[in-house]
Length: 108
Image (spheres, rainbow, N blue to C red):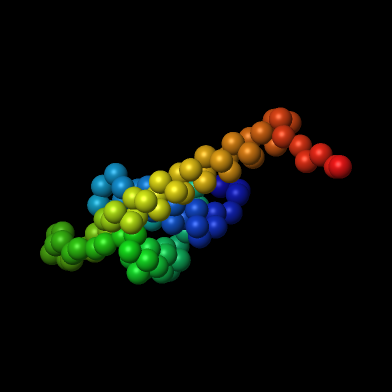
């Protein structure tokens, strides 16, 4: 993908992913990689930040003899996700309006 994905957009994507179902880091990274060239070394600090902010919680579960750390969204995470959805909607509509010539900055 040509367009860079800032960390706030990555946070938004992560919250949207775990809202649907609890997910572990690799699984989250594979979905985020559909739009961003993100490495696990970048992803895990963002997951930690979201957890520290109270937007995600974690639990461990054994899978094929190894423990996996799963991330789930909290009530604060749902509120943040709703806020980011509104912000994204406004942002993307404004970009589309500019691209399609419906919005111009008029000089006084």
